[in-house]
Image (cartoon, rainbow over all chains, first blue to last red; front, side, top):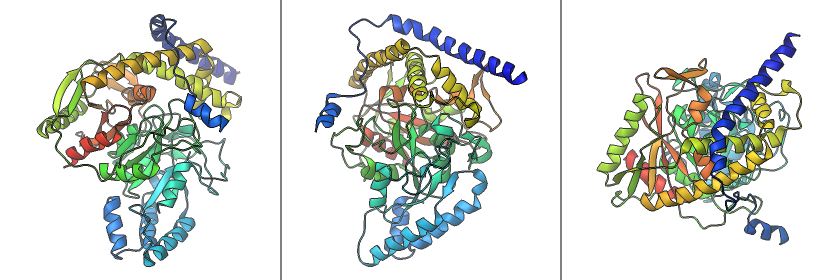
Length: 52
Length: 448
């Protein structure tokens, strides 16, 4: 029983931490226009390597 | 002692490679209570040292690292030697190949004496490892060594080895370098191969050296930098010789001091020590300029979202909390809560910050800042005070480092003094992409 309530408490704390992060993050998301693309993880150079 | 000093003794036959490894192992034994290693490879190291001695006797010299003992953070694959990642998940994992950088250092004659302790899975800044013991700071064993490359930094501070390898996803080379009073370089993203290194967050992970002086960082970079076809993120840009460091005054060099962020919520003794170093740079000929920098809190937030997403992608299939330390399990759980659009938007914000920093580098050649806002906290501390506010030790430790992983720029942490308690203070020299040689030159001018 106490294990279960500890788990619930930890889960609530995790939600709270991520929600706080999200609050700070939202204004950043608002300054993104459609033209801003993510930095890609694979590059033309790495794709060239794949077909070698 | 430095790599160059040990090398001179080996080449003059005043000391053999076997004797040097024996001395190293004896020193590691003398300070084993600091929990700096997970595995010690004594037998293998002594056998390799004998081979290096035979080579020197035949006139075969592999270069400055010939016969020099080192240790690798225990997330670098070492063929036939277990690589635990500081985790129960990999407690019995024995790789069948070496990380590319391990191969390169072995070919250059370096001798691995063991695998360094770390924060579990490299996911934390304290190196308080619940499975393999907390790494203690050699400057004061009641304090943390910092993390996640805690053992790598501590082994140098405890005079066991002259250099080690670490990894840095949100400050994990620079933070322990700062807390232990050694040098630690996070190179440009893509400069050093990550092949054969357990990942934490693919787009933030960097491999780099720790050492007791700038010249030794350069010597190791000469060996480990450069393209690796086995690592898709590896760059193929030619690189300069990092060592010997080009000695000249700093005339014409523009050094930026950020007006915001980096000197806020920083302990007075830390700010004063960094200020003294800046005065020395001015005396050495550098032009010191106040600069406006982008919103680094925003960059830190986006970097944390990326780290959550990427790290949890590696461990999401695990459901058994008992296999993890409490703090690492909590971070994995928090990562499950990040939504796909948030991760992608964090990567898009990264694009904006890259543009901002490209503009910054038209104004200055390097930026100086504290590495950490504090000296090493006590092992028992969970928070640290800034005036009336308290901040989680983990957040405070990473606060001034994390955004540079997000950006990919190189950053070198160097010791710049001690606080009243005798604990080291670290400052970082941040430069444009691929400007590691310039950072070493600035560091070297301060050492002189």
